Image 1 (cartoon, rainbow, N blue to C red):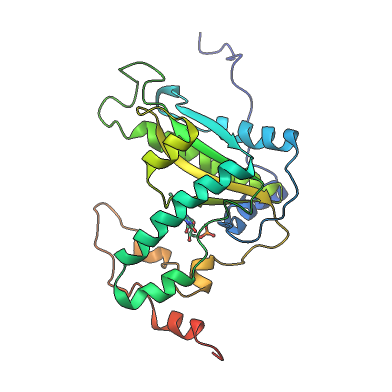
Image 2: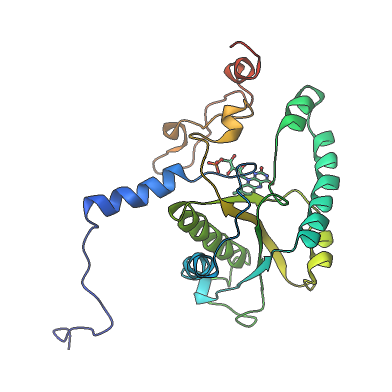
Length: 245
Ligand SMILES: Cc1cc2c(cc1C)N(C[C@H](O)[C@H](O)[C@H](O)COP(=O)(O)O)c1[nH]c(=O)[nH]c(=O)c1N2
């Protein structure tokens, strides 16, 4: 019985070097885009490819809990932006006083500039009350939806499309604006559009908000460890923000 080839399996091998490089390039050069969007509309077939990439993501129990709500109208994007604006004012006040000027100076969305917004939702009831793999941790449906978003983000990078994730709003306000029922969760509100420039390193690092942590601080063997204490807003970052540095 074991000698019989399984007709559902395909032979596999590592990618050719060039293909490997392409995958890593997409991963390492993907950026969160806020201000670089061009106004040209994205063609339908391109949007379809991005959504196919998202829909190919892993999901708990093969639940596929996601839906993709496409928003193109300027009127709706303006209403969403107003929800962002209100929440962003609240957000600013949550930071320590000494960080507020820096926070205010950051651009944190491209809702009106990006020609396409996609609200990615998660339906916790998509596969019935008991879901394989989610039996002991209900968060797994949301995690699956995040996997779909990351696929979309990487595919977008490969297509020359920028994507920015916006999470500064009250979920209930955006649900009301988009007719999303109470029981459905918003996982990601995404802004998409062509870009011809991207930051080479994360914009929040360039603007001195926070640095990428050394990977070696985050790797442990056998049992969890406390990371080394490091300042959140490094002195080097303050230098970066001051003119002439
Ligand atoms: C769940 C989640 C939510 C948000 C984000 C990301 C993720 C994963 N990011 C983008 C985030 O700031 C960005 O990924 C990091 O700064 C790292 O930069 P790059 O993505 O490498 O460019 C983000 N950015 C922003 O300007 N406004 C936002 O509301 C959010 N929200």
